[in-house]
Length: 550
Image 1 (cartoon, helix red, strand yellow):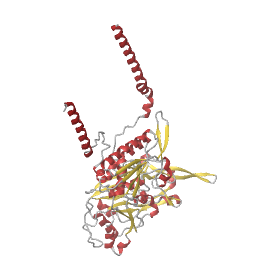
Image 2 (cartoon, helix red, strand yellow):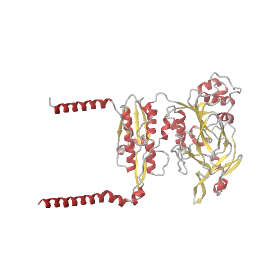
Image 3 (cartoon, one colour):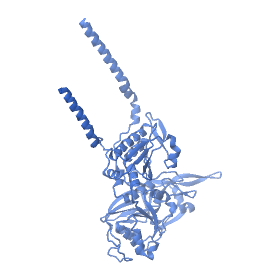
Image 4 (spheres, helix red, strand yellow):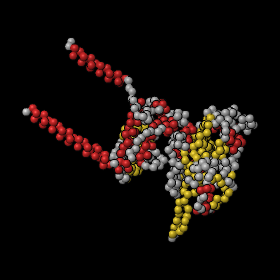
């Protein structure tokens, strides 16, 4: 056989074998500096649980501004990683143009994206930044843009790209999980009515099993009450107003030492915004809940002084009459601090400021419990001792900055560790076989304001917790509380994906506009000039060459 033919056959055989091997061994390489296309171990573990076809539909087809086009490309590349990891994932991009009404009915409300173009011109586009996920008989919609207000459209897209992995993996995890975790909303001690928690809890119920649980039965059958409450994974205590008995406290204490998670929203001062608006004046005084020793044993104390903050939310105040119409003006109300979130924790990263109403301040105590500040006031604060009268007309007084020198105040804190029972080395209100002196690596979150989860009422219907119905200001209350629930119940490390940061370069449009003519010359005119010079030189050399030969 001819050597040439032999080598050709060997080459063809090698190519065929290489193709066969490439089908059996598959490897993708992420060469980006920030490893943006590398899935976390948590994501890989969750994706591996998909055993049947999971359909993801992205409504990002169409003519979009360049920044939004980038989100489209990044989403596509991220989803390619998912499909490469599990062939049961099927991705489809669709245009929302012909199905807008249907998408809106499903809860996919369009967003208006404002983008600054080169030259400073602003352009707007109505977009559907949504995806839907379907698995077996379950479905889930995913909002692809951050809820927190961003300084620019470019920043909004950047945050959206950073949150792609968390948003999709979180939604997939919630839809494939077999056992739903159970949350108890505590009642029986004057907690907030359901209608005031609707905006928050209606979102919680989409992911977790939610039920009310009363401590009233503790008085007659404490052992069964404790047994029943330990069947829940988390208990929400939302603004109790009545004193807890020792048996009720012991029940909560043993729920915690049996590794139950807790979210406390506590008002240690009686001060209500509605009564103030109705009368113009009120007396703020301490609320006795009998919880001080319980929280003290876990490592914190909620003080009874009220916090005033120059960085505060606005409230509408009547300023006069024009005809029969009352005129209102939105003014800063220093008793409603806007608390900034811890930028290094997944619960509070990238959320809008959280509005507090007549909040107290938290002190942390030395013990073995890890304490992570979640929400703090600005440095321009003042502590108001109580009892004290609060008058609405004081909103017109010009504040003296020198009076607001108390510094940052802790308003919400995460506690993690082995919580010691408040009844260790103390007499127990009742005997139980479930008694434990310590929990095992447990978590709780304490917020020094009972109204942080309270939504307003508009026309007898609950209003969105994220907005104020009067001023239309947007707050991070709902996002913060939903993140707290996810964090407390997260045993997979999923919420840590919210801490993902990417190095996404954003075009400096002002600089680009200033240097527009330079770059136009460099990219358009200069190549033409160089081509003409090259052609001219080529013609001269060619002419000289042939004239010499002749």
